[in-house]
Image (cartoon, rainbow, N blue to C red):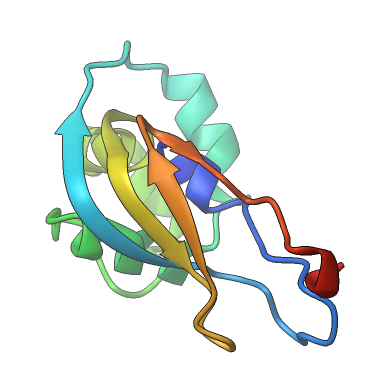
Length: 123
């Protein structure tokens, strides 16, 4: 599971106020090379929850992103764009779990696929 996907996932357990962001428990992280697409990165920059991305990338062992949302002028920096690209698209959570911070409910991630099925009493 890429951090791009993680940045868009939330939990819909009934009675829970805020289902985002899910915490990551990483057991196995892999890097998969992806073609660099400048236009995609520039378009995604404003749609990403920066704190969730920065925190998730640190959890997965990559601490090259700034903690605070950078000024959009940083999109002119090739160095920043490479780091953003790597964190967003090339880091993959292969094995582990996504954890709902409010309840501690764990959603397993196996072979890069998160299992977000809810139990009957959570719907």
